[in-house]
Length: 97
Image (tube, rainbow, N blue to C red; front, side, top):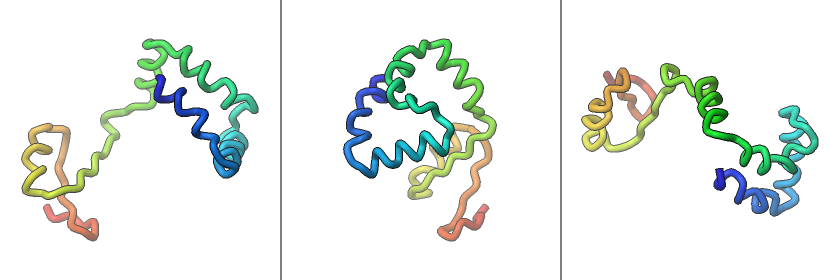
């Protein structure tokens, strides 16, 4: 959680960054004090709250992995993971299976 809170001061280091934060508050419907309370709220999260959020927002059956690399070097290792169908694509995104 320190990653989420220690970088906050640097997040607002320019006028553009402050403008983006204000736009986020308005467009995402955050309360006016969202960023003022952000670090405190993140630090208040416990393991159970994080596990509950993970169950809601992380759906392994819906994940699509896109791996880019040398096919000869990575394909066997990817297949060994047995995480689902492997679909090879060419540079234009067309299946080569």
